Length: 280
Image (cartoon, one colour):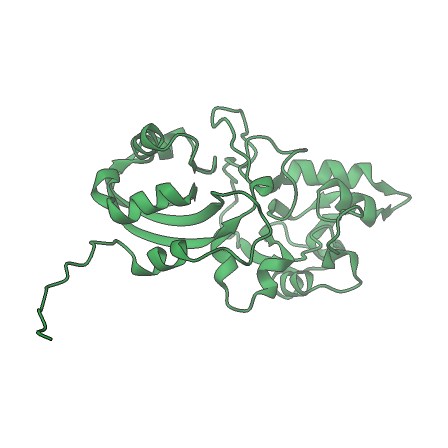
């Protein structure tokens, strides 16, 4: 039988890894949705986020969500190259991967699938100055930023007064965004003013009602099927932040503010690190 050689022209893919992952059946998910959401990091070239979004939405309506952390200035700015975090469905990601030039995409890194219930498409014109606030600090200030799970950020070591927190900003990515925080694609954010107000509300006779405080910020939910490690006597995130930025409440310096992001425990339990891409 004669053999005939034929040159195989491979498809010009932006990312073979993304193509492979998008082609696999999602047996690890319980969602019945035929087109689940993915988190992804795209690298754009010579295009604004707004134009990129409009181009994608014109061809794949309702298949793209860009987090509201990108404000109007961010969205209008044209950079030579810029990395943008997005949430998108498979057909749109396939289009980025196979027809990258049509969208001015030069890089694509997939994160993990995201449950539709955890993803909220929001109006980016909402007045949510909380998460865009510029924190002004005096000269000599050292800001400590911590990313971990189960950070009990109302602990005495993170306060400089009974109802005054040293945490300037906290984002709880495992919390439902339905309350207390508007204009978020996922999670809840709390400024120092909001944290102090809750400390005031839940402190009685010099003692903080911790279960009520952490329920109010969305970190502990007794109705959830998942136990939050913050409800335990010890937690990893609290320990790490205490080592990094903890001070006695009676002797806390005024120039050591803290910002923190709390990851869902299911993310840190995955030792591969793959699920952190959906959050960071």
